[in-house]
Image (spheres, rainbow, N blue to C red):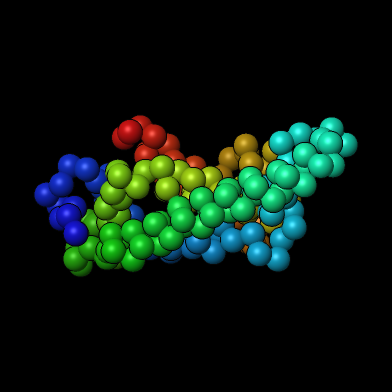
Length: 170
């Protein structure tokens, strides 16, 4: 295993608050479409709108394309889960500078595509599961979490920020 402290092929995110670390650890859970037909439809949409596809072509799409897409998503989530277990670490006390616990993520850039896919899937699933509107998604971040929808909005925002960091580093 490469040493993230000596390898420039890592995106190193330091001083992460415990809530951010906890939300990162929830990426696999957030990206899970199980039990949510809305989320499943959002992740595996047909290539054309309702009534625009020939039924035979639609059946072939579901038979040949959807399983490959699903496998690709599952594989990306497995990579992200392993990376979180290996590379999301609690900092030494006092390292955060505020006297509170902080975390550091050493994200392997070789896994950047998997992270982007997993983060995007988590964002899409959360938006579908909580039926978040464009207005809610594009509005200011709420500082108080008063409901599961508020938490989902915070997760989506944090995941988008991590996507932005990864893309900047690529």
